[in-house]
Length: 468
Image (tube, rainbow, N blue to C red; front, top):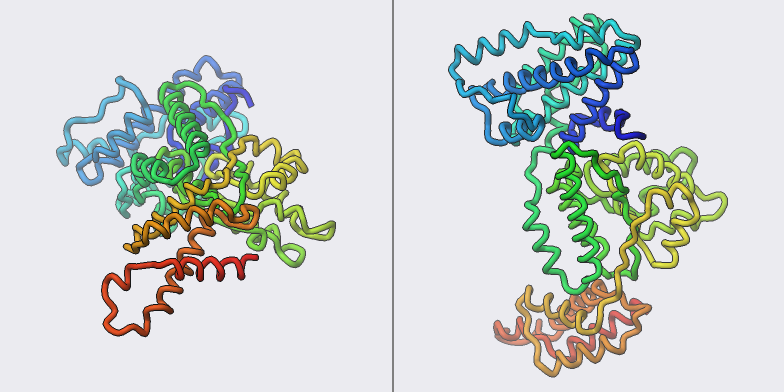
């Protein structure tokens, strides 16, 4: 797809627009495409200027419903149009506002009437009206408050456009989000994203993972620069955001996936910024027809965020009669359908994941970024255990700290689940302590806080008995 060809997938996204400026750029391209394909390039620029003014008046009229345009809405206008020629009115007196609104409702811009005379006009006008409606809905939600008066205003003007340009039939039989449906779609989108500084702090505070942190920082920098390009009206760099995480269990893959989701939500790359974690059983059914539906359901839950598939290679390990291949095919298709508001991260052991990606050209073309999660060093495992102890206000002796390190230096890494193994040992240490002190008389605060060597070695034995 060339830089001048409109991306209709972006224009056909759901009510919540992941990146409003990208959406607007594609809308401008679509107007150009309509005029060029109908041999009307001489009036194309006039149509683009008129569309911008039309949208600006619409959003101003919408923002004035409560005789006020919030700071968020003002920033949204500047972000969307980036023009000094369009100025926000300084007067919000009731008479002036009502006059502007009345004038706007009598205003059907000439470019829409002109497109009505073009080939394929119904198809074009239907999509244009939907785009105008979606921009208005996102503008209304930009101040984190979407009320019924705003929905009513958008709905009434949309119906006016439909009636004038497509006919009354379309009002009852086309488009048509109700107030309730529109509100439901925005329930998640209007929740404030986690501030980027707060997310970055949580990343920096993680123990170890220096290579991973560097890779994530690169992803963030790419996203920030891409947003800058779009604001400067440069074409965005369309690189794949899907990722492959490779490494042993307990190396922080799920935690990093969640942080990336929050970061992308904060930067506006994803509309929600949440993580949906699934495994083979969540995607693959037992009977014909189940797999496609299960995979679609998982993707629907993940839209606006990240779909994280742990041990993804298991999708390809079921044999000839297995439905895993169907889940992979459905996943590839839906990744393409929702590429502007969905990131998929697949994770698992290093060798298995490389074989899994290489087995299918569709996977290889979409997953070209690998992040390797190394095993934690003994020092890092001790630090992780100490973190659990500090957070829960437990104390240990210096000699026990030495025992921790000796154990983590000798443990079989092929069987030890890194940070997950540390957590399991910590929890079993607490169990050992509880069994040791529960029958003591006059249990002191120190008794409740102190963990001793027998607690640790009892925990290790239980962990190894269940693990090995």
